[in-house]
Image 1: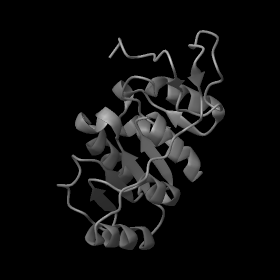
Image 2: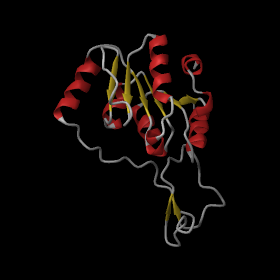
Image 3: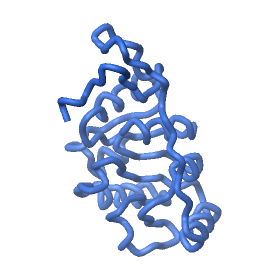
Amino acid sequence: MFRDKFSPNLVLALFSHSLAQRQQDWPRQTVQPGFIYFQDRSLDKDTSSRLCRFLASGTAPIIFTQRSTAVHNPGDFYSISVAAAKRLGRRAVLLGSHTASRDDSVDLLSLPYAPYSHIFPHAAINVHQGGSGTTGESLRSGRPMLIVPYGWDQPDNAARIQRLGAGLHVPRCAYSVETATAV
């Protein structure tokens, strides 16, 4: 992990200049092309149909998701998120591998996966872990965000997004129904 961190040929800083300008201590061979957007994989017909029906059947939902490594260790993120959405009287979509077992309802849809580029623009707000790719997709959607950082660059991304006025953040250890609904 540390041995190959900086290539002698090219280092890519895959985030927007809006989040951070080139720093003096970056390696000389660093290029900052901006966020990268992944080619989303398509949904199967059943999942696509469920998602389309849900999005069309009411007000814009809150999208709750964890990607990167956070999806494998969500802790109580999803249960807090469901309770927060209920307290706010809002519909919600839960995206992530640990959400598929939940029962769907008129106010809650749980999916193991949906392309962020397709679902984020339909959100009232996107609540996520603050990874660079997820943050880029959320910015691109034009919807506000609440970032609950998991690790690595995510706390820094969260602070930068808040400074830009594009969203708010709550530290993971402080994420609760009270803090999620207060912001």
